[in-house]
Length: 91
Image (cartoon, rainbow, N blue to C red; front, side, top):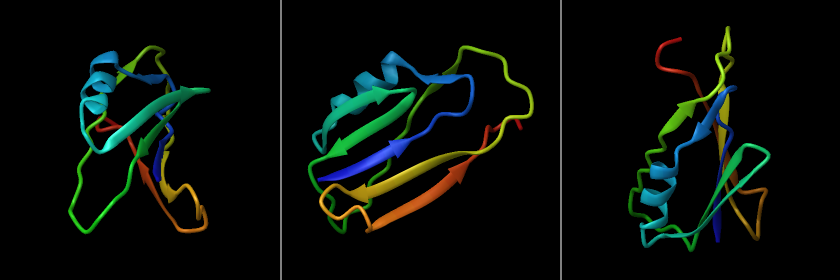
């Protein structure tokens, strides 16, 4: 099992439409939101390229937004992971 852990930018949340679109993908086993972190559980990954588009909605205006992180790791071997940061398009 593979987990994608998305920390939204400050003041942003995952839209319900985005969650629904993710849940309809066959590779996605489950989605959880805990303490404003989105966890996307995948059955497995292979050599095929996968793209995920998450729509975030701003619910609180925050100045000087700092980058947020996305982690992907193997549930059974969490030391095998990748980390990336992203920023708001308008910042």
